[in-house]
Length: 251
Image (cartoon, rainbow, N blue to C red; front, side, top):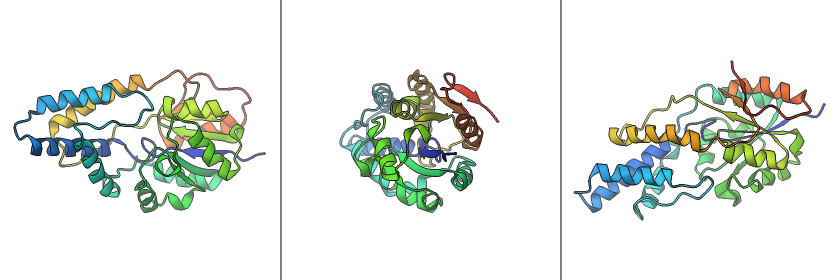
């Protein structure tokens, strides 16, 4: 039997995205206040909501209060590893999966992600790390996945893409002929200590709204935690037809 291969995302699957977002927003706020000490928090929160609500899926992130957005993002990148909050159980689950399957990482992440994966012990478990910032293609462009699979000589029909977004992960995976699994992790992340409570509250509200805008209509499996992936993979290996839309597999 041909061995299945796995292309696994990082943000929202292995570690939380939210601490990076919040550290970035706090940095933008502090830089904006340095430019104009009278600038009100309400105006910043309004601009923040417009920024997140106005982003098209798959578009590169525009700057918020330029050039402060760019400056703040550079600061976040410099402390990337210290901001990492692993999803509980995800790193151990990936380690177990790597004992049975060939695994690579395919993610939209800055180069600093490599150091984080090394610190978590993930880099040593995988065949390849393909980051958009290093490869030149960004999800949802399927060429990022194809770049990784070509280098590993993986066949799409034997590959499962594991991510957290139907539009960024499942859609390009299915376009290439791969199967797709979307992980819906819990909201167990914590805001970095320095982030203003008003920013955290507004961000949590935006996260709830953004879940609905990224759902999409692709056909994929859905799981509550990476630990559940092995069960899905065994099922996929014995199926010749596609699963029902958003079929749930729960512990």
